[in-house]
Image (cartoon, rainbow, N blue to C red; front, top):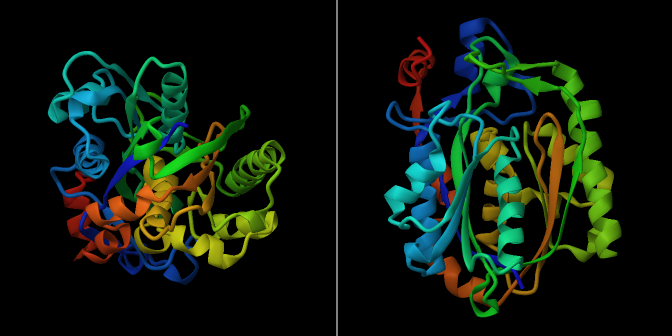
Length: 343
């Protein structure tokens, strides 16, 4: 059965408090986008690829495989450093994978990483590859004095998938997608910052797709919310995943371990994948995890995972997401602008 063999995460040390942003622009941070106070921002020499490399190295270490065993690399991001030059090949070269592997950069807003996961599952199930690497990474952009500036964050998450049952820490029981042409968030070619329709991003965008995909997963699996130990949703802010979970019948206890948004904001392509990693950090064997991503444009990818006994061994060989989130250095707003080359 195809599943997760290992995972790795990378959260930059730098943090920017919302009060810093709000004070600069004369705003009240108390209700800013449902976020709880701060977001992760990259160092001056960090981008989506460098963060992706750090996450991938940890994934390989956890999986306990030779990098040359990887036969595919799919890199999901909406902040690739180059408009024309793949991030996936840079990653593969640095990791020492060799030359015989499938590779592609994917871009589907915040669900580019989970789209790569679905492609990799297909390659494994068709016996074209034994192990595949998937990365979701973003050095997220937000125009100064825009609502996105409060939530747009940075981080990376990497997963190695395979089908050797003895090595899987979590098997994939089901997967599906819910897709439409719904415009709520976009960035035109050459534009430095994305644009959005504000409240339109809730309905008919985020909720229609996340709820729609969730119902599809329930129907396909014949499972109910109470059959799961955890649930994970894409986190554009602190309010949306909580509202989606409540609408679907999940409890706060099932959702809370995944809510990385409360501490580091929304790292776009890494958001839901990092939430899943946070759950896997503490999960026990034979626990089901309900997972739905979201990407503007628009679509949601859904998975049902079930952990195995192998997870207890491999949890000892990773750096927990919570530990990385708590390791931080605060920046002033002016230092943040200088560091991210916004001025």
